[in-house]
Amino acid sequence: MPIEKITRVRRSFAPEFKRDAVRLVKQGKTVTQVARDLGIARSLLQYWMRQQRGQSERASGSANTPSDSERIRQLEKELRDALEERDILKKALAYFADDQK
Image (cartoon, rainbow, N blue to C red):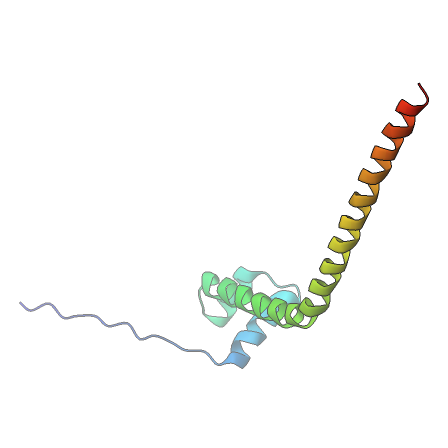
């Protein structure tokens, strides 16, 4: 008796379908409810949500990166200057404190 090999058909979904499914969750429906209504696995819907969140973060993050890195460089320079001034004032205070004795 030969054993037949069972092949699974992999379903594919259009990007619009994925966006609409995620939008339903954002509108207040539960992930489980949306997945059940659409006939998909709950984990698949959660995966789509993570994908969409990652895409939106990359899109918003890439626009701000140059100005953020420039601001960080500026703040680091200001911090170095402030630390240098503090060290000079500490030395001056110690010098004048010894001078008054």
